Length: 279
Ligand SMILES: C[S@@+](CC[C@H](N)C(=O)[O-])C[C@H]1O[C@@H](n2cnc3c(N)ncnc32)[C@H](O)[C@@H]1O
Image (cartoon, rainbow, N blue to C red; front, side, top):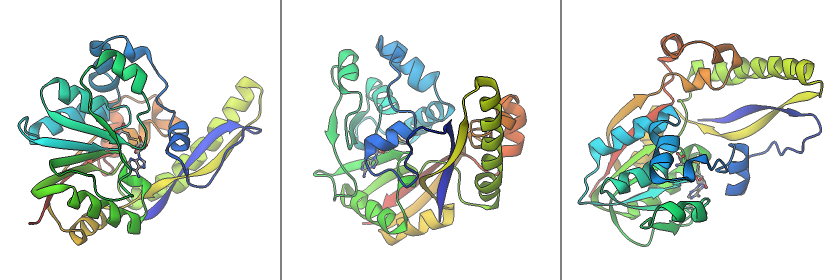
């Protein structure tokens, strides 16, 4: 496992904290926040904007989760954020409680969804008060170093019924030589080129800041931590061979997805692990 840094191209005078974000709100700001609201006009627009027509990851999650969840079972989502996938599944009849440190879009969401179930929950603080058939978590666990990751798995295990499942995408491609080269060289030099171009075109000085984003772990390490917490590994599904290159580097931005996919096959951005709590 290694620390994952991102390179921000911003105004030289903009205030920026380069250490890991402390508060959830701070990390949301770094990630672009949940402020877009064109999708809150109606349920249909919400799903079109944030799931079916949104980020390629969320389309994949919807289909993959439907394949392994059961409408009769009770589920919990941890770190639900905007709750796009959760609300779509609930709309189709799945019984899911959303949770996060904050309900970031509470007012806008309650305007269009009457029956959303949301509970404030910090997975680091302890087990959830209640037991579920399954728990899922998308793009949250990259925030935790190994010791905290173990705690998270232990708390999840304690919040599951015997034999319950934990379906989890830690967020981002795994730690391997390819992502190490991208993080340490590719993204860094691409950011320098972007700063240069933006400074020339916009005539205001842009600078590159190296910011702590979270942690990258490889698949083996992730499974080992889960097993230490009492889970059995039941499978891994991967998808999205594009985001790690195309959305992070100007160099790949203009290329068609089919071309980027060929280069990105060793670094899928989606890694959906399936674990079962050992009884
Ligand atoms: C990158 S967002 C992902 C949101 C959503 N699952 C998605 O895929 O769009 C990470 C989320 O994890 C939440 N989070 C961070 N630390 C947490 C914790 N200790 N317990 C529960 N949620 C946490 C944040 O508030 C944030 O909403």
